[in-house]
Amino acid sequence: MRNIIRKNRSLLNCLLLFTLLSGCFLIIVSVPAYKYNKPIGYEEVDDEILEFDEEFFWGAATASYQVEGGNIYSNWWRFEQEEGNIKNGDTTEVAVDHYDKYREDIDLMEEMGLNSYRFSIEWSRIEPEKDIFDYNEIEHYRDVIDYLNEKDIEPMVTLWHHSLPIWFEDQGGWEKENSIEDYLNYVEYVVSNLDDEVEFWITMNEPMAYITCGYISSKWPPAKKEYIKIPKLVSNISNAHKQAYGVIHNLDPDAQVGLAEHSSYVVPYHEKNVIENIAAYAIDKTWVHYLINQVHEELDFIGVHYYYKQSIDISLAKDVLTKSPQEIENQSLDRSYYPQGLFEVLMRFKDYNIPIYITEIGVPDYHEIDRDQFIREHAVQVYYANKSGADVRGFYYWSLLDCFEWTEGYDAKFGLISVDMETQERTVKGESWEYADIAKCNCVENY
Ligand code: BGC
Image: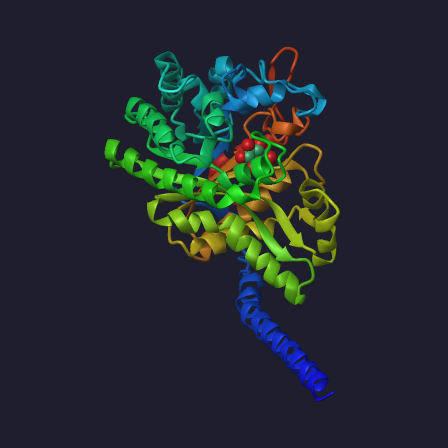
């Protein structure tokens, strides 16, 4: 009897200790979480017009695979050949033919008063087979860059934007240590051939999105579900960036080298909920900031992407057991238009003390909000972020053209310019002229 009482008492003690420790843990973690999640906000100014720094870039962005057409050596090309992978069976055989029509597109940018263009170089064009480089493709990109420089539009060049050469994926992609050396060979080849004309380089676009979609939700190539590989991928990719930073600076000490990362304004759905506060904090610190933290000493600037606010609603956590990551992503994250979120996100990035370029921000046609209002309201937030100490030097609307939106095909139209898919005729969308006005006056109306 005594033994049973003793046993129960020690079980009770264990339970008490566990509850006490969990309580302490929650209190300890929730303090920084609440602090972090609390909106910073700003005091509004009365000025009717908000002006930006003279050197500010008002630009637009694209990525090679989404606009060029005919990138047959890319892993995405192979992926899109498999039935069911891309909505409506869309393909990039021609895409929006930016490869041939880049002059026309740059002319339209000039007409809109944009002073910078962020675009990417297609690795699979430059190096269609391992160690076989195609100089003709370098010449193509040199022509694009020459034409931009002729028009006084500053090129900002991304070296890897989601699409990878087939040979690279087949040898294990970023999972393998030798991926770093292969990537550096490519970077060195491109930069040594183009560094006389380009100052701004982005080594990679949204590596965490690549990892999430390629290895967790498995909706992008290599379409794996191998969570276990995430630490290795993050480590190889961040080391690749760090070393690429060195390679580029060795070739051109004056180069500005950055990395572009996806961000959203991650917040708890219920402001006071402890678990949601901790979860939102943890998600922001890992998916948005972990990689940047690894590489921030090798960054001359940070490319920040902002599209929406993501509210974390823990009442949906039970679905983890029954639904796919994709279903959970679609349903549990309340993604909404929220310009003030851009201000808050920029204040989070401000703490790195590195110049910031918003290298992507945009909205598709079917959204609740008109594009001109979307752009104006977000530009106002950039003004306030700068006034509050952030060093934001550019705003690149995503995207210049309606284009191939990965698995969504051509349905999601983010462009400033629409493209007739039959004739490839370009038309600047009516509301894009408001962005043109902002770019031309380097200012935004404050209402
Ligand atoms: C990607 C683009 C994509 C855009 C809109 C960004 O995260 O870098 O390639 O088209 O989002 O979804």
